[in-house]
Length: 367
Image (cartoon, rainbow, N blue to C red):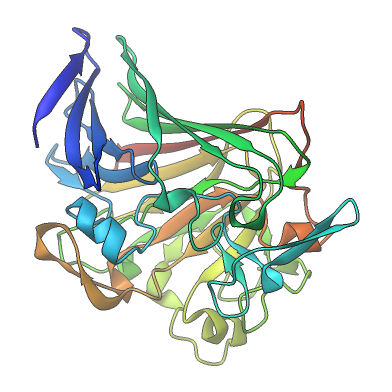
């Protein structure tokens, strides 16, 4: 890659690079680094987190997110690696919802449902890099995109911004902001695939130890649409209120929900609910490397996905073949299918209002 812009003389740094070419347009990347040696690479295509290097217990750095090594992979074999998912992250039943008496039809791209905003969601467009900055505490990049009224069937022109900020404390902040010209629905998230042993380690995430601060989860039908029930996790394979390994119950064929999802692919109802400031939602530990990831978020839910549809068809960074046990996702968001489920927290956004979300992926180590 060719570096053509550098900003900062401070501890944290941000460097702009060329990641690839999309037709006649250049696709940029911005690499954020801190004085600890941690780094994050964010690309303008899909406002995606393409790489994230964090230290293990011995200070050895490794990239902990799966992704394509180049732009061609994002375009030809999209897998939502690290993307900003929207306008509506997760699923909407039948690709339909009504708002103020008007019925809206979205692209159906996941069985009978609409997933992550449709065929050309926010993950498959070129965002504008609107700001790059750094200081003694953090390096950041802000990307923006304007989705026109009617895009993928959604009403209203939606103006979206996402800021990635890497701090000196090995935290990666993701701050979202959106406004609309008409009443609409919005649900944004980041879709990074994590392996704390290292994305190229060849080690399974089934030995990762997971905690989720949720007393309930949303069971789904066979098409991954929530039934509307808030089911207690107590006594089930979905109980991660106390730390246990991901692989402990994932092969339990007697659990209908695990059969439906081919593993975990369910929204957890966080005990903190919608909050003004980020609250601790989940914690993942890799005993082998000592790396720990905490997710803090203002969102009421987190989708825990155990990478069930990584089917060895994609060769990623460092020529790694990605399969089910290669990664996990923790996607902070509002609930799936909320526009059709009035008992769920609302995802409606009106003109004059501002959609905001802050999520923090905080890294540390254990001895």
